[in-house]
Image (cartoon, rainbow, N blue to C red; front, side):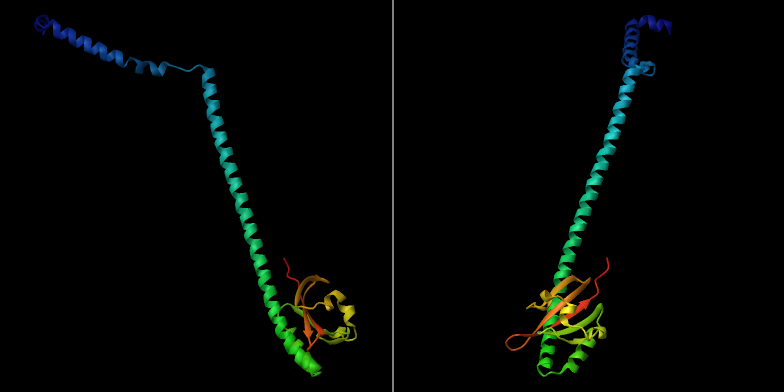
Length: 204
């Protein structure tokens, strides 16, 4: 082996140079475990990481809060629109009901058939949430009442003039704590009476 090395000094020198060059390239890897950052830079790095994490939580929380507020506002708007639509539909249905009731009562009233009107109104008061129905003449006389406690009362004592003077079918809220349907009963040329249907106010 020694003779071989003596005979090939150039090859041995090349191998040593290659190994030395290889070791030099990877010398920095050996230094990594022994390299330490100064405490000041380490503290700054940790601080930056904490700031980024905190900012992320704050940003996410704000986005979630904004989304929750937006959804709540949209829900409130949809609820309000639904209630308004339901109220409009309710008023339309009550106006149709009042129109039919007005026609039925007018025919019997013209024939002075008070007993038949009393039967009509007694059936109506059995409807859900209906408390009482009264028929008041144009002169203010109470003609029919499903509440027998009012039989001796005068129309103006039950409802104010602005209610009894209405000339078209109307739905009024919070009249003496009640919701009412006011139905003018028209004769051939003028109003001859007013029907008032009182309902229980819905509880919220």
